[in-house]
Every structure is written in C-alpha cells, then in structure tokens.
Image 1 (cartoon, rainbow, N blue to C red):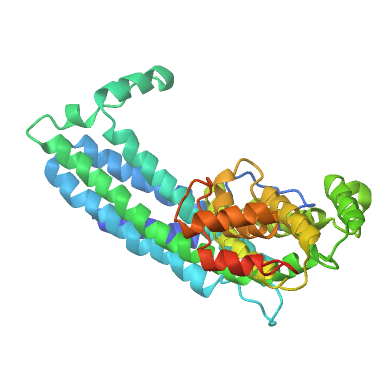
Image 2 (tube, helix red, strand yellow):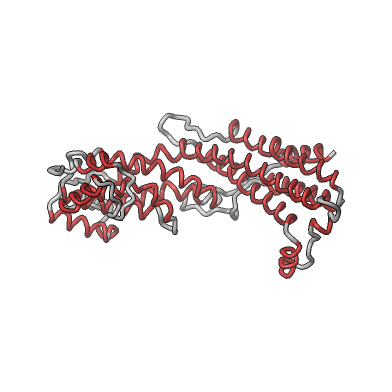
Length: 376
C-alpha cells in the first residue's frame, strides 16, 4: 500500500509539475521567481515522503520501519530520479540545432532546473532523515528555538536495538538517494559543460589574448603594466588589457548560468570548467615557443596571474590549484639566469630546499625554459 501511494504521488506530482516562471539567461532581465529555482514536483513529492516517514516512525514498530523505509528509498530511486532522468534525456537535453551554435535558451533553462531539482531534493531528504536521527540532547537543544520537541527514536523504540535499527534504516535511505542523485547531477553538469560552456571557452581565451605581442621592449612592458593596473581607463581595445577582456567574457559566460543554478551546482560546474580552462591555458603557453622574449615572459606571468585572480573571485582560492602548472611554467620562463641555474642545481641533487612543490618534472621545466628566445 505504501509503495502504491508513493508511486501514485510521484506520478501525480510530475503530471501537475510546474516550472518556475520568469527565468532568463539574460543578466539584464530580472528573475520573477525566488531561488532556489526548481519545479513544483520536488515540494509535492517530498511532502508525501515526509508524511510517510513520520507516520511509520510514529507506529514504534520495527516491522513497519523494515517495510516502509526501504520502499520509500526504492520509489525515490526508481520513480522520482528515474522521471527526472527521462526528462533530462528526452525533453530538455541542451543540444544545438545548428553545429557551432548554442542550444535554445528555454532548453538550457529547463535542463538547469532539472539538475536543481535533484540537488534540492537531496537536501530535503537529508533534512528529513537528520531531523529524526538526532540524539535526545540535540532534539532538546533545537526545541528551544522551534517550540515543542519531537520525540527521539530512542523514546519511540525503547526495546532492544530497535532504535538503532530505525536509525540505520533512515541513514540508508539518505545514502541511497544521495548516491543516485549525485551520479545524475554529475552527468547533468558534464552535459552543461560540454554543450553550453566548453564551446565558448576557447574563443573567450583567444579574445583575451587577441593582438598581444610578447616580444616586448621595456617601454612596451611599462605601458602594458599600466593598462593592467587600470584596464577600464585604457579602454577595451587597449594593448595589454588581457584581464579586462577575459573578465568580460568570463562573466558573460558564467553569470547567466549562476543566476539559475543552486550554489552547489554552480560550484560543481565551475570546478569542471576550470579544470578544462587550465588545460587549454597551458597549451596556449606552450604555443608561444619562439614568440616570446624575456620581458614578454614577465608580462605573460602577470597576465596569467590576473586571469587566475578573475576565476577565484569570491573566496574560491582552492581553485588556484588547477592552474599550478601554468603558474610554474610562467615562473620558470621569467627566472633570472642565476635563479634558473640554482634551480637546476637543486634538481640534479633532488634537493627540495627551493621551497617549491613542482608539478612540472625536470625535463618539462627545461622545455619550458626553452620557450623564451635566447634562453636555455
């Protein structure tokens, strides 16, 4: 009976499902719905799940728990997540109609909302479970803020290890749902990256470095440094405003998605995006072989650092690690001859006293050094 009720509730919730209204990827347009942006089915299904779990626990019967809670887990995994997966695959898959173009805006938004549904549903299940497996002390502490305290599992299941059994059953429900949902979220995030973000990253980087010449003299380096310090004053076409060009393109790429996604989903997408961005940025550095001099290497090091600063804004300093190879390449290229000789000497003796945890091996550092003209 419980399985039938849940399945019928999930089916009905998706039949009556309503998407959030007024969503747009255009940052200049206001959003007419409040975050988190999800469809109505999530609230409807989770309300029923909460009621079923509540009533099962209220019976204080171990047999009821052993029957109902696994049934809830099965229905959520197969019906709820299964329905979202089918919608992602068959109705809202973000695929461009013309090769090289972006998918339609409405399709992208619908797909992002479905991924949000999974993330928010995981949070719902986590709260449903955690609120019921708390210890009596934690429940008493929370009750000071929320009023009457709910009964703990220990008081509802006083015999033998029944309370422990009920607690483990609920934990298993949470773990099962989070595992299934996380897998589908990861798949969805990769689709967004591959079909929406990735096609725009290379043009973004090319535009940022457009018309930049790294065969520089001292006067050109000083002018470029001034333009980096004050990019808005120099204008968008000013020579050397790499950070200005990149930040403009980076914001145009990410802000539309960020305003729709939940914070967790956007962080997941950003992690995937940055990993790829670091790879193509490294390839761009290698491509300067023979087209950069010593002063240009100093300028390139500053340009790369400015791009990393744009990416890690908002306290995302852990994301710097993805760019370690790029920053170390720039470090090697801009070293003075004496510093480079000392680094090589330490490498030959396998001494790590230079204080750098190298991501580049010895041969790679030598090849990077050769990128700059007249350096060995």
